[in-house]
Image 1: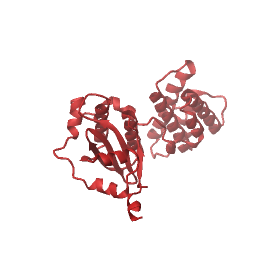
Image 2: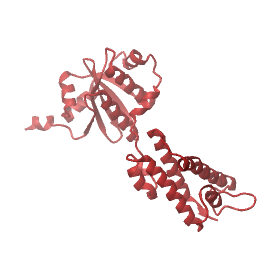
Image 3: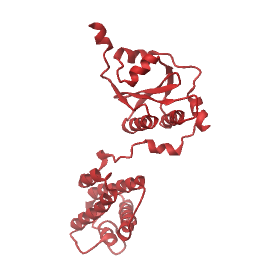
Image 4: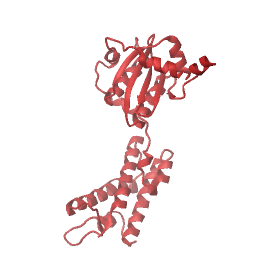
Length: 279
């Protein structure tokens, strides 16, 4: 009975990835994106197959053995890319050897707490081979730009203004609709804000947020400096007109990452609008 208790699968470990390299890279990108503090990454090696044990301040992750080494192919390329991702984030990486039995249990998501502790007590491999895995593929430790795609392309929902949260939920299905609707909705909000339905686009935003020699803007920001407040008004107006007018006058077909960036820019305008105060 006690033996079964000690050897039952650990409830502390979250398993990610599959035997496929791409899935494991995306799992690593998810961890790097979602965890505020990663304390250590252990590369678990067995007969030129590799997995990861990653400890954050809140969670313990296992990424299955979708990485390999010792030849040219997707597995070794993925290993080199994963190491570069971790180095980019300034995370300590150590490598240890594990047995075939432990690697099998790891891939089956059945490691026990005792086995997890035993893995973490293993001696680090010396001399260090981390950089050799990178040099074998890329000839440099410099971060490869193409690895940006391994981060999840998602909106940070905790930062999205509540007035466009419904559009954020629809963004993946139709980013153009979400973006254009966000512009239209923001314009309507400002019209109501200044109680003037006759103004549109650039003239509307200038009246609301930008002061000049002839008049003061109706709204400003509590910056303690009129020039800074006016600069925020110019930023607000320029971002809106630069991106919104392009969509108003022609059909826009941008890559998904650019659409994502534009929606976040609009979200910042919503947050600025919320923070503005009437003079």
